[in-house]
Image (cartoon, rainbow, N blue to C red; front, top):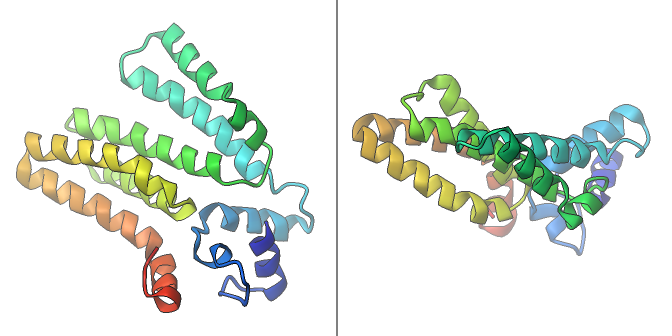
Length: 197
């Protein structure tokens, strides 16, 4: 929340002098949404809605993933209940932390990657949702790189096994979209640190 206040005060999301480097080089995805709520409302009363809606979206998305993996309605309810009752999640669901925001985009990535990997649904809308949700997850928090990697590898292997040429094209499009979402953030970090992360 501190960098959101700096951005609002400075009227720019440019880097600012601070001894806390993570305020500058951490992913800004969730805080940009918080900034919009903060500036539009004029108060910080609604800034926790980003996490709250991300929590609700993650619960719904977990149920969808369970359905995509073959669970019946009881399995979907069990998956949603498990996601909804994570103790740390309950505490963070009403805060300005970014854990649920990154979880939401990772759940979106996985739920949109499952049909792309298991069927022939590889059209532009599918590629846009997979690449966009991956890019947004990476923009929110660096832990997305760790959690998205196994799913990205699995998606890549499935794509290359089914139709190597077309699969490689699909993967390239997904990667290009994810990089495009983060390009501004990467360039700013390169300028300051010499590293995109």
